[in-house]
Length: 296
Image 1 (tube, rainbow, N blue to C red):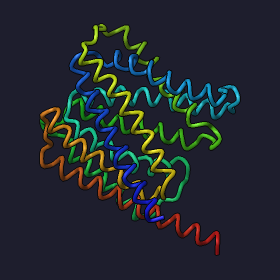
Image 2: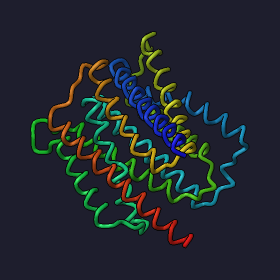
Image 3: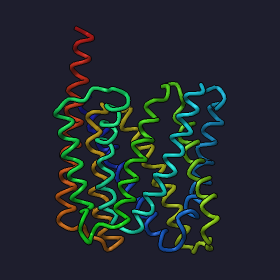
Image 4: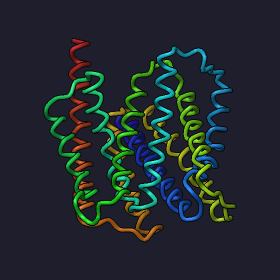
């Protein structure tokens, strides 16, 4: 198991970093084409990939219960709006800042699960969540010249991703992940088709095609590596290593985008990461107690 956990941690770090590379390509693409065009072009490829997987597995949407179908639709809609807010934030603020703000999502999901699903949440984890939100405030810096609409978009993205993850938790375990991925990618693509009414498309340059291919490649690679991490070792051990995406975002922003976060962003990021790791540690302790009680 120790060797498996090390492999899982490496997979998690690589997968999280792959998503940071994907975000870098998206930010570069935003310099040459509109957001909705990116939604559609990328969505065609990603939906085709997941469509083949669903077809091969003979998964049928109609076989799901009405509740699961509703949760799938909610998840798809929240993912579409999350992508909208994320792209707007990414195009108008440093990559590292957006990535750091999104690291608070697990804390937001834990709080939402406590409020909506009555999942247990001790005072230590609740305190960590509140401190983590304080770290986010240091990053967005409300009330200063640094606070802009992009910061609001990043926070709105956190809300939408939290809703997406909450709806995922409420689905039955039997709902195939491939079908969830397909409906989500289709939802984002259709949102892009609708948004294209208000946007002028452009012919992508050869460089833009490379960046577009990069977003698809590294997004798929990220999903694959994180799935490996979840299957190889203990999830509670591997999960904290997803914060490698923040380190990757800082380095990629520096090398590829000529961006560097300010001191408050570094401090806020450190707080978010520290509280996130602590919350994961407390959750791991809670799960260990539950298992001990069940076996004892």
